[in-house]
Length: 358
Image (tube, rainbow, N blue to C red; front, side, top):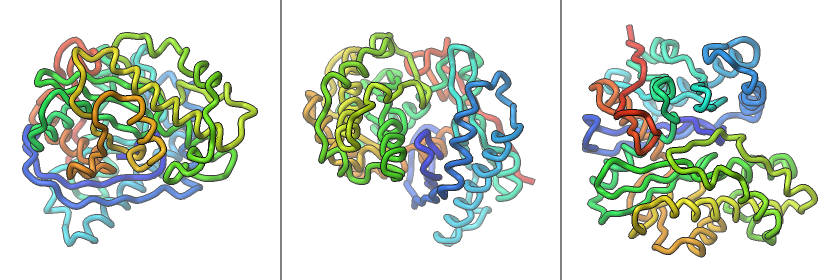
């Protein structure tokens, strides 16, 4: 999995039949270099001009080569480090790198060459997992809720619970025993990352230390929260660049980071408006779970216990990588990946494209 935060590639091994999870294997990561991030960011910047999701000229083709190569490197290193071979793996779920997401125009673009990845690794690859949902009128996100449901069942959690993923964009899965209710909440780490990168040359606010030294600008926060997205009824999803930090101009590095962290926490709290009843517990996964400042803000704003996935035994940093392995297994069996309550697709729907290894 390579998410909207563009920090690198996560790898995870699970054993599953696409319904139950039987075992969790090792995990690994392969960061993007600064040069690789710049090339991918250039493709993201140019992506609003795309009308054909198969466009791969110029920056798009260069970025796709980087993404595909980085994923192949990550898998090869992972297998070697864990004493595995290609023959030990049934299938890889390959999300690719999202560079543009506009479901209202039925357009979502994830770069990454599934057949090339399969050929290099000698392993079957399920890729292009979001396209079918968007083509059918769904939001194309979030896709992980069905895996959250499997995790909650494996852990025997008392429902209802909420799984909150804080990657580049935030999303929630509300689990109550029915089909999962899920939607994007707002920005998670993307705006904070962009803010500290532009002003301090840092990839992210490690440990939330910059935000911890700042003061929240309440006027700027109110302006950020005035966006119409928050009053829209789910299902709904976001592009990484849906929100802008322009209202924060003039703030210090620290105050801007604090205000953006508060924006993430406040937008998550607004998600409760769409839940049928309060959750018993919030479980936070993704990179934001490693930010103590952001976690403290969430605990201040939410009305139920807030824990990290790691605290209940999940591999919090690799849940999405595990999820796309799980989705690949479901795709092979023709099982639904998305639901009307998660993406707004008209009916439960499978998806993904299989690239067979030679």
